[in-house]
Image 1 (cartoon, rainbow, N blue to C red):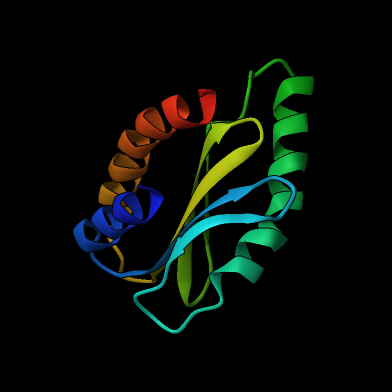
Image 2: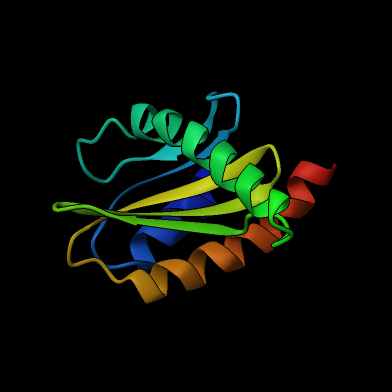
Length: 118
């Protein structure tokens, strides 16, 4: 089920290098790698940034973290929180379609919230 969802996202978002559903504990739930990228290591490294960003947002009264976008010289990382313990990460090349990525991740979150609630 997760694999089909990630396949759908990666096929709809131009410039996708990979997608992963991961827990904040660094354990991968499912991944999709159209390219030869080690997305598990990348996602695991971003868990500490997500924890710090989430804590900062809560401390200043902004509410829970929903989304984080990081742009580097070679790629764009889009992260959508599913629950406080799970997130969905989409790795794009520098010319990837960030708007479509955000839209697809937001749609996927609504589906995945129900899955993680059961």
